[in-house]
Structure formats: C-alpha cells, structure tokens
Length: 147
Length: 141
Image 1: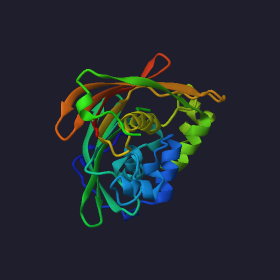
Image 2: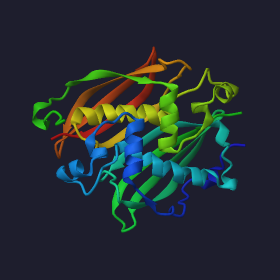
Image 3: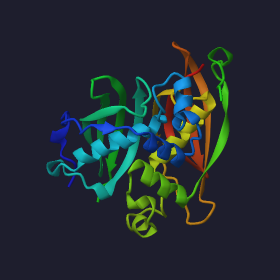
Image 4: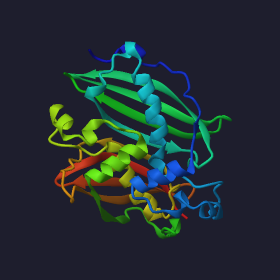
C-alpha cells in the first residue's frame, strides 16, 4: 500500500513541549564527535554570548524526527515504516537551540509523490519556543520503497 | 577555536578535507543520542533481510559529521545557519574495529550578507558519494 496522497497539505497538531537539556546536548555532541566547549561548558557558552550551552545544528533532528514519526504513525496515512529511507534533510536556524529552551514542533506534509514503485513524502517541521519564537525550520523527505 | 574571518575568505576557497571514522560503536552511540533505533543501523540480520549489504550508518550521522566539519572550521557550533543534503548512497559499516571512512570536503561558493558564506560540501565513503546537493550557509567571525 502506498502513502495516501490525500494527506498532502495536511498540518498536524503541535507536539508536546520538549525541554532541551544540557545533558542531551552533551550526549548528542559526543555521539557526533563535536568537542566544542560551547556544547558542554555553561561558562564558555555564556562568555560567547549564549544563555546556556548550545546544540550542534543537526541536533534539531531529535525534536523533528520524533514529530514526523508521530505523523507517520497515522493509520490512514498508510506508511510502511519498514520500507522508509531518509531521502533529504535540511535545517534553517533563526538561532541555535540552547539548554533551557522549551519548544514545540509542528509538522505539515508538503507533498506526496509517486515515482514508479517509490513514494516520496516531503514534510516541513517548525520548531518554536512555547512563547512563539521561531528557532528552526526542518524539511525532510522520506522515501518509501516499493514492495 | 576562532575560525577564519569573513573578510579573509574569498569565493572559490577550498576548505581542507577531513576523514571521519564511523564504527558500529559510533552507530549505537548515535542511535541512543538521536533516538533513531531503526535496527538497520545496528542489526546485520535485519539490514540484510531488507536488501542492504550490511548495517548502514544513519544518514543523519553522516550529515552531522558534515555539520561538524563546518562548525569546526568556523569555530562555533552555531555557525551553520542553513544546511541541506540529499542522502544518495548509504555508508556501509562493517563489523570490525575500523568501520567505514567518510571523507568530507567543502568549497566556498559565495559571500553573503551578515558575515555569511555559502559552502558546497562533498562527502565520500570509498568510491561512493554519500551526500549530494549538500549546501550550507555558515556565519564567520
């Protein structure tokens, strides 16, 4: 079963608030080998002008992927998760995420296209603070391979 | 840790390429840090059952390494304001201590307002281009 094209253009409810923590930023930085003290040392981050330790740019995927996974679980969307591969990804940041941020993610399915036996689904996820400040726009294309 | 100054960089400047090693242990660590526990990134039996040659790296880990390449160059994890890639070929990670090698290189393709530069990235593992259409905007001091 291919992805239901009637979902193109659908905007989903915002996620529950996600609180960005120092521990999670440090864990993510370590996992990608980013040794910057700005990801770990509160004093160094403040000296550089940030409220708290800052996240590497692709940290936003922790928040956006959880949100797109939630929408992909919609039964009527018809995603076969086992056949999904990640096709494209982009991030546009208004500012870095930092520890202490409390953000919500909201996703829209921009397009669903059938290309031979594959279906591509492009989503855009906006990350904003609970006060409405824009932090990051993430675009992702999932590719469902044909069975 | 200060990166190159905006005024010291000209269009066409090449950023020195770097090699990154990706082992199975790195994939497990990234799975935990990112929350992406898809078994094709740690379980050979499942990876091969869906037609892959072996366990493959998370595309997002490869993108993160390219992001780190840029933020290390610029000297600040906040330097990358825009970053987009296409995942063209998976990085196959064998079950040994060496894992896979990913080579990342960049070239400055333009100077933008706000002390920012446009950068095109190439990422290879073996003979394969693992990222294509990889473009970033990086803010320099």
